[in-house]
Every structure is written in structure tokens, then in C-alpha cells.
Length: 479
Image (cartoon, rainbow, N blue to C red; front, top):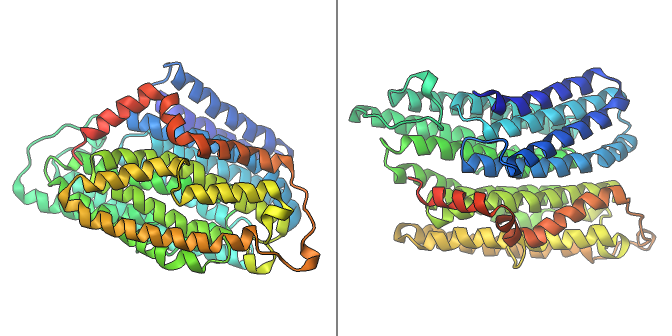
């Protein structure tokens, strides 16, 4: 691994250590330093002074860096208010800040590292750091959610490691060459193809657990509902997608020996199951964060479907990593704001009449909800359209595509049924007074709202050379 790929991860980890050992008053400045590191890295990328392994790594890092900057920006006022409300001590505040930086560092690693064993280590670090972040409040619900998250995803982590090792060892490559950036196709005996396929499916199941794809999603709703809002945003927008990106890279190096369709079928099945689970549960959620958790299962399922369909749907899936990350970060941070202002995010316990009582927060909930169900002209519409249109280009994918469209309609209806309970349904008379909305919480979400509104067309235009190169590479992809 080159120094340039290790450096941003090392710097963020060093800052995380300083947050832990320095006085709590230093945490804010160290987190702002982390924001500066990410912004400088983006400037170096834009100036062609820093080069990542390929167009997909550059694209995913761009998404990770932008979303992480906004999450850190929002985290400062959010944690200050949350710590006051829940009586966090200095040790909890320092632990949160340190783990958040380690979490972001591990997401950066997943974006830019190329060796499959290092990628597994990156996703493991993301899992373990976010497990402790979920448990930060230290109440019974948070601890139970963290334990469930740990047990389910670590079982998946073991499967991912063993499956990756079995599949790559069966190709005949030495362990020193298990790197997608330098991978070369070599001849294999037909007898090893069976072991490659077994290992590939084991790895896919392991990483699907990390990604929250059904039926391995059971940890996800509890973890999202208990985690601090910035953590939920990074979990949903970046960590879930990162696990699927690793699977895409792994399948890409295995296709010279194993037929691509044999690998892609597994992703299509997992994608449809995820849409089915989301369709079955979204209409029954009364907590905003649990609602968006099931929506995350839906959207990671869409990304899985797009990779499975291939072609233009694959382009849509990679684009959806951005559109979903920006939209879901807005919604989870908005849900965190609701919980701070109303002391709950449950529609049945007083989080009602948001548009009347907190117009900025309610307005961004309405905008984010319209975006996440795929309405035009919001960002997710464009990527979902590419995925669904791409599915119809192949006769073998049309039936799964039609099923997906039907499930998306059910999910749309479920979310449309629930959202008015927060936005318009009035509470009791003593709960109709306006609530002051702190600008420090509103401002980061306004930036996200702008990205959701114009990012569907604007993002590819802003990074046009990168997007053009990435789309060209994806359309030539063997999977």
C-alpha cells in the first residue's frame, strides 16, 4: 500500500487518539481539524495532486469525504445538546468524538484501499467503532442494540473473511497479490471454479450482513434507532454501501473463472429480499429513525439490484451511492433534530405538527421524504431511474425488475401514509406552541437539502471528467 493511500487514514486515527487523551474541551478543535483534513484531500483531488486507484475509488471517496464533513459539522452542536439532555460526562463525550473519527477513518480506508484483506480490516474497524458509538448513550436500549449489532455483523465478518480467502486462494494467486488494482487473470483448473463460487457466495453473505441486506438485516433497525443521529447518517449513507462496493470489487476479479451471472444472481436475490422486507415494515413505523432504517434496507437493496443487473443499471447503482447518502444523511440528521427539539422522534409521543411548530425542520423532513421515495426532480429519482431502466435492457432481468417496481410502489405508499403523522397531525393543545430551532442544527441540513434538490443532475456536472470516466469503466465491467 502506498503512503498516499495510508496517510489520510493514519492522520484521522491520530486525531482520534488525541481526542481520547486530551481534555474534553479539545475535542471540538480536533474534530474541526479532521474536517480540514477531509477538505484539503478533496482540494488535492480536484487539483489532480492526489491520485486514487481507479475512478470508482475516487467517486466513493468523494462521497465519503463530503458526507463525513457535513456529519462532523452537524455533530458538534448535536452532541453538545444531546450530552446536556442525557447528562453525558466528559468521558462519554471524548469517547464519542474519538470513535466517530475512527469510524470515518475506516470508511476512508474502505473507499481507497485495494487489497482485499485490508478492505476486510477497514469494514471491521467501521463495524466495531460504530458498535461502540451505538452504545454511547449507555441506556438499556442502546446497549441491547449494540450487542445485537455486534453479534450479527461479526458472524458476517467471519464469513466474509473465510469466503474471500477461499475464493482468492482457489484462483491460484498468492496472498501478496490479493489486490483488485493489480489483479491479472491467470488460467485455472475447472475443478477450482466450484471453490471460487463457494467462497464468493460465502463472502457475499458475510458482506451482506455488514450492509444490512435482508435476510441479514435484523441488527439494523435497532442500531439506527439508538445511535446518535450523525452515526446513523454515516452508517446508512456510507458504511452499508461500502460493504457492497467490496463485493463488487471481489466479484470483478473472480469473473474470469466463474460466470458473471452466477455471481450477479445472488445480488439480485438479496436486493429483492431487501425491498420485500422494507415494503412489509415501513407502513407500521412510528419512530422516524426506525422508518429511515427500513428505508435504508430498501436502498441498499436497490444498489445490490443495480450491480446484479449490470450495464446502465450498474451506473445507476454507483450513482445511487451518492444520491442515497446525501438524502439519508439529511433524514437521519433531521430525525436527530426532531428528537432534540421534541424530546422524542415518535409520532405517538408528541413529535407532531412539525411544519407548524418547527417550519425549518418540518420542511426538510417533507423535502427529504419526497426525495427518498424517488420523486422527481430530487437526486434519488435519477439514480433509481437508471437502475430500473437498466434492468429492462436484459430479458433475464425483466421479471426481477417488475417485482422491484411493484415493491417500490408499496414502499412509496407506506412512507406516504406515515409522514403526515409527523408533519400535519396536531398534538394536544399544550403541544402546539412554536419551538425555537437552533441555527447550528438547521444550517448543515440546509446544505444537504440543497444537495438533495440539485445533486441528481448537478453532481455529475460538477465532477464531469470523473463521472464520464467512471461511467465508461462501469459499462465495460464484466459484472
